[in-house]
Image (tube, rainbow, N blue to C red; front, side):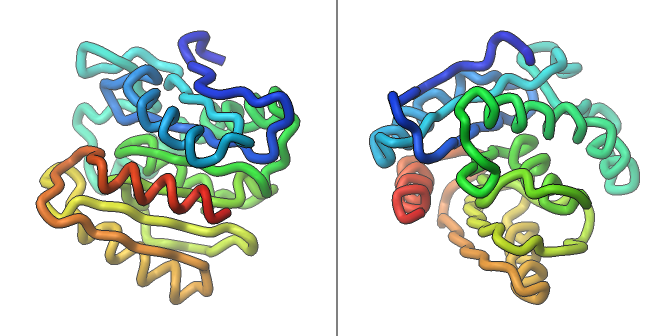
Length: 208
């Protein structure tokens, strides 16, 4: 595991594991405030902000995969190469917390949300019981809706990096596959996380 990951909260007896995954060119430290808000909402949750394994090709921060020259055609292959490390990170923290996948929540922003969403499309054991995607998207059309996984999609309507239509389309596709999915679109929010988004994440996790 990359050693810059940050444990935001570690209760004596955790009943829930919440893992935060940052965007490209960012780092685990950037999502610590969100993690602290989550810990306030769920004092029984272990919360960790996970640092991506590679130095970003953008010049600063970290990344799960490079976005230099990325296209709709080559993005899936890049995610496929990144997925083993992503799943390994989840398994590492589940083992550290003593928490099963069913009691694990993945909270991703941008590239972190893409990996979190795409992890639900991988054939094999369940990685997490809930995915909260902020300003995210699927890299490919939804292929499956694993039983027991809940989805919460949060997106700024003014996002010009990952347009909100990707979350709208994902919600419809997940529903068509029989998934439990919630979609919240935030007027005026660009590619970021504001107080409204933080509140939605808190309420989503508090209700689990």
